[in-house]
Length: 261
Image (cartoon, rainbow, N blue to C red; front, side, top):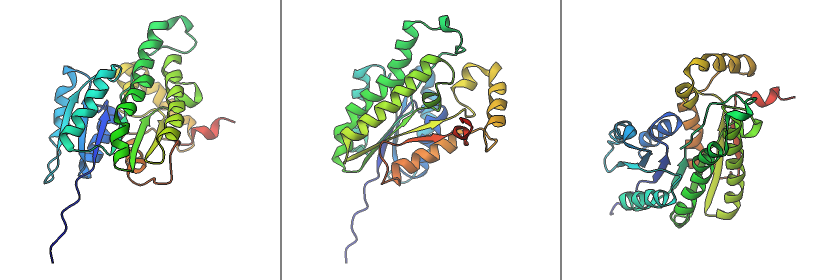
């Protein structure tokens, strides 16, 4: 009796994967033996992306670092094509690339049109362009999955700035639209974390992070702050196991929504 050939390893492309939730997601899938394309923005992140790829050591496993800016449509197409060329297939996409500008929400003059356009270009238009480029390949396997990294700010109108919250609210709407359009071959969901350790808030505003952290712990029913690895665990589940879910906006908020009464 001859043994059947081993199934090819599934592959995933993760944008914004050099740090934070994106990097944690890359580590999670690499640890599970997936072929992983690690997108990073520029030369400043090459070393971090390479370190992640070096962890892909299982027999027959590969991880590749791909430089590109999701706000540029040609880069999005190139990232998808490079992933398919490396792995022969694309089974999942995680849109983790995101930016913000730290502006207190009452400061209406702290943002201008250019700020909105820049933030939307990465946080909303970027995921759309990535999904559009990846859709034919995700559909080809019949069970593709997309997870958009949104934010609790997009639901509550809170967070680092009004422009950021608005961009994430738009990303939630985009998730719903594309879940309808790409079904039944591709599931599209979003996760909306609250403040997490090692995220962009801690990098961009370390002087206020401790205060934000204490405020969230005090306000949330579970009295906790998150870690990128915990968000990555939910992303992994949405990609690999949540066969009944599409168009879901999953709140990872330690029960913060319970306080909005």
